[in-house]
Image (tube, rainbow, N blue to C red; front, side, top):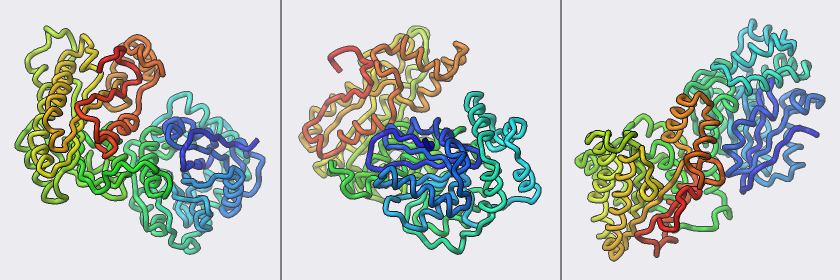
Length: 523
């Protein structure tokens, strides 16, 4: 059977193609992040992987092969993902404008024209014999940073399991074919993903000149500290860019979003928006046509986050512990895009940990000012205008800790409990003016915050991060019977409901998105 893997559910399918020397297994680390949201099909290229006995090695012949496979699978709508060698093939296939193609993701693609390469490098590739002695440096050089042992081993195995005729056909012919003048300007949205440390293909700036001139609707994402093998080396970061791109595409497709949340053209201010739950919420509200304003401490992080949006949000850094800075932020937003209708306040810190009586006043005050008072400050500045306009949504992220405190996290517990009480208090009067106030309390979501927790736990226990997650779930969060961390997108879905017209009778409530971590009936 030819190499293919079909997983996930949804209106758009990712069809994933691999690099020279790879196989469908190249995408194994990335697919688990993607197929929670979209179906994924991974295909082998003629001469590689399970298609090692399939012939037809020119760019056009490989495009024929993939077209045949996609049609045989009866895929109605797909995002074609080409990596390295197959990026060029994907562009050739896109030029035919097949009826199933909706968009392209080009991961470190070979350009449409001859791939820039010295004759010495071409001779070295031509002399490749698929031995382990040559496969090891091939994989290591492409990775930039050595892959984890298990991934490195199957990448080496893939690099050995090749038809050398197919390999040399690419080196001598496929990589030198010039399609740059044959490819027309194409209507497809394109996401180009480059590794900042990729030495195998042209970088982002050069790719814009060589590749993206054929695609007016394009965006570029650069993954820091990544080499050429991003599906293996940085799967989560790569998947994050791909999911953001697919989510926006889905929102544009008729018939795929039957539940209108009724908030198109509303203005939403999202704090803590450069990553995690804040960024996931921004992506989801963007699908609904909301005008976004993103804020966080680091302007550069915000600017980087905005690169994933086709309609660039307004992005302003702000220190939420400073009332004057919050006031200035809101004035700037009102001057640029109009009154704020929706506030989603996700900014927060875990703060110091330890014996509650040994923690200092400053430890408590840090969490108090960031986790509690920041919400008071943004409410002071935004709710009066919402009242005057007769409509508003104010949602804050609390935590399971607000109702199920953990001994060593006292500063976080009390700040989040106070926040929950404050929002409940606001809800008593604000609803009379059409302003609804609610909270969402997540537990153990896969964000930078829990990444740091698990890294520390792994170091203290001398185990891998994966094992640290497993042991934490077993020992510290037995109520999460699904035995996994939640995803930011799962919390974002709850937030999107609460800020919508659909939630017009939900006020003063706490919506738990905790996988069952809180083992009680009350919120």
